[in-house]
Structure formats: C-alpha cells, structure tokens
Image 1: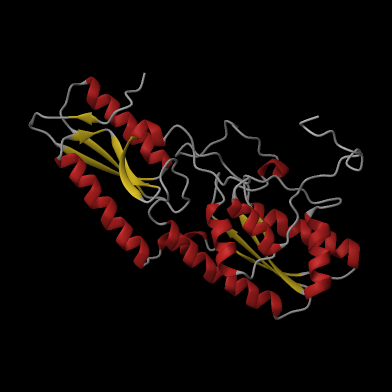
Image 2: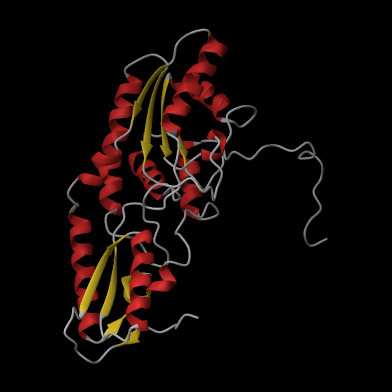
Length: 302
C-alpha cells in the first residue's frame, strides 16, 4: 500500500542524512526500494530521485535530463546518413538510435532533422511485405528521390526478430535482451531490392549509440540539471523524503517515487506529435487493410 504523500523526516542520526539517486526508470525503482527499506528500519534519511536518462522514459515528468542533448547529437548522425545516401544511386542511410521501449529520441530527432523519410519506434508495430509495408515504401521513395534516410529505435520490430515481450532472457541489469534491428533491417532491404530490381542497394548503416550517450550535455540540459539539483536539495532540507523531482506542465514538483515507477513513459501514437511526424515523413501508418474496408461502416451514433 503506497502513501500518496511525500514523507517528512525530522530527527538526525549518525549516518547519511540525505541520499540522492540519479538515473533512469530502473534507477528510480532502485531508489523506491531503498526508500522502503529505510522506512522499515525507521531511519531518518531523505531519499531523493533525480531523473537522468536520454530515453525520456520516466513517467509523469515533462522530460528527463539528457534527452535534449541526445536528440541534438542524434541529428548529427542523421545528417551524416543523409549525406552518404544522397551521394550515391539508390542510397539509403540507416541510423539506429537508442530507445529500448520508448521511441522519443527517434521521433524528436526525426522531427528536428527534416531529412528522415521513415521513422520506426517500439510503440508502432511495422511490417515489411505487402501494401503499406516498408518494402513498398522504400521502393517508392527511391524511385521518387533516388535516396532516403531511415531512423530506427533499438527496440522497434523485435517481434519480427523472434523476441517476444516479457521474455525471461535479460541482461545483468534486468533489461530484455534485444537483437540488432538495424543489421536485420539492412539485410532485409538489400535482399528485397536485389530480388525486385536485380541490382544492389547502396545502404550505409550508422549506429551512434555510445557517441550519443557519452557526450557532454548541451546548454539546455545544463540549466535543467541545475534546476533539478536545487529542487532536490531544497526538498530534502525542508524535511521531505521518498520523492523524485521534475517538472509537470512546466512547474517543478516533488513526486512520490512510486508514482514515476508505475509505468514507463512511451510515445502516444494518438498524440499530435506522432501525427506531425507522419505528416513530415509521409511514411505509412502500418495499418494493414481489411477485406471489408470498402464496405460502408455503421456510425457509432446509429
């Protein structure tokens, strides 16, 4: 049973009085476990979560620290892929970006670059063959422009590679092990293009994963980090514990840790941002047509 309010502490003991835990959704779950153990032991220790992950997959808050830096750096990889693609006949630049369960980096980098023709994220299942599939779209775009750029999040299309959700195969950190969707998609596109056109496909695959993770934060994230730090410290000094700091609708708040670990923040494909991406790339929505699509549909109000 969770307490919906942030807890207050008052007494001092001979141990750490404040613990600041910085990281993503997994780290915040760890912070929640530490807080619960401290509470069971009756220790007067403030436990504060600081949301830091480039994936932007922490729920409730507007964004996590590191996200805008990741999007900015991802644009450089996309720009390089575009240069490679347009410099050769039937050129494709394929960029794999981070995003195990959430496609925020891929979506925002696509919208920011405006050079991307196709963006694939974990929240949207896609398919290769048939009407409205990737193969059809790639052939159409190459015929029109002679080149294209594809961005794929690392967690996209895993079901096509034989990885089922909630599988027991996990790494040391508890994350589901993934296949390399970029290499798989590269091979599939080359195979289809060769079989269809009888010629080779000039595809350049770029995986900038750790280049994006390891760079210094940009100005926007630096300012944001300062605000998170000050907000976290002020709460602890005021006697609060068991909370994560972060902005909600632009206003910084103290959020019970359990609240941000209930679920992961994922792209809402019914939201306007995804609609804007579809409008920008003109990519298929990956909705397979049904046999009765041409039949009159009964109105919900009838």
